[in-house]
Length: 442
Image (cartoon, rainbow, N blue to C red; front, side, top):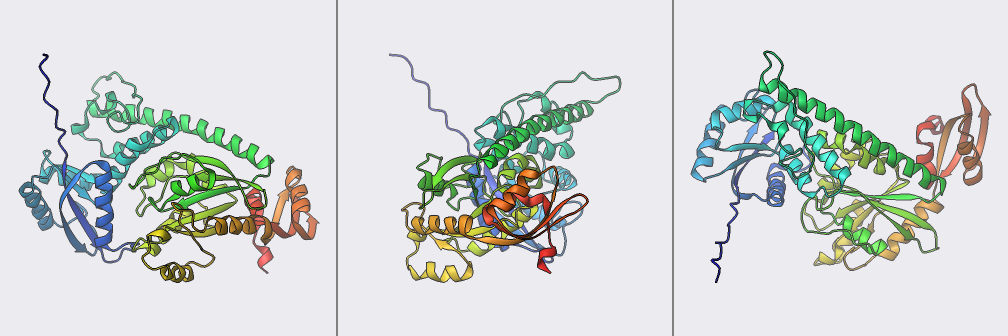
């Protein structure tokens, strides 16, 4: 009989959370609720949260983010709780990170909210595109924070210890050049390479979108706070098999499926990455190719977890992100999901009043799906919006499209193109996005 090896027990890092309430900061969630969300992020990343500590400030301390006395309090509590990690619920500047590490010591890691979200994204990026986007965001986050403690970083697998695959190039040191300078140069080279690769992805997606538009099949994008139920909804609508889990950022990579409306019209439904408050700017920039799927959509379905105690705040955070990616002018239908979890059906009716034009559904059970599809049909094919456009002469296809599908009220030939006033079906507005002027309001 062979000797059996003892079962290896993986150590779970213990985390102490630190939250700060800035008195002049606009927040979507209260400090308490934001820390509750941070705990869910920590759970998703594989940490065990063992405590939390908070502070109210007028503004962040320029050196350590929190006050010097609070830093000592955090250090003592972390040692008392045997914490391996201190999680900050805000993004720390490079200086904050360095000063805190100097005071608290290298034995306890300092991780801010941005780094935590990047780590979760690295775990969940399952396609080459997703891996490239996450790796780029991680390197751009790390570059200004690079210190001697990070030496030979670029010799490791790219994007968070190999989770995203790929390796960065290794440079030879020149005369008088420190290892830190070599690492910085190599990271910049890697960032440049990743941006080039993602531009290819972006161009490929743009060609796909152009071909889709030629078919005149409307594109509907699902947007919503992370874990609102978007993947469950696309599975319900298209009989798809998109991965679903009760955790934050369970799916990152966009999924597109064909769906038939009640009158037989075809649409394309696209599911994209979920949003969250304080979404790192590095992620928004790196995921530009993916988020363009939202910005180019004809209609948005804004999925809201109506059972969440802060559903309205989450919806506001989604609107803020849509504004950041210049997609806040796209027509949207609020979709109030998870009504099957409500103990009182009247709550769903009450919620409809807070979200004008909303449809209440259960993506899991299928309740309200027929009403949702009928609403999508009406929005796409029966709703016309007043619009005024100036279309260049070399865009004859768009001029013809306005005549064929829209309602022309007036038309004038100008020096640079054709000025058309009238009404267009909602589904076609994105086609004219770059040519819309606002004089129709007068």
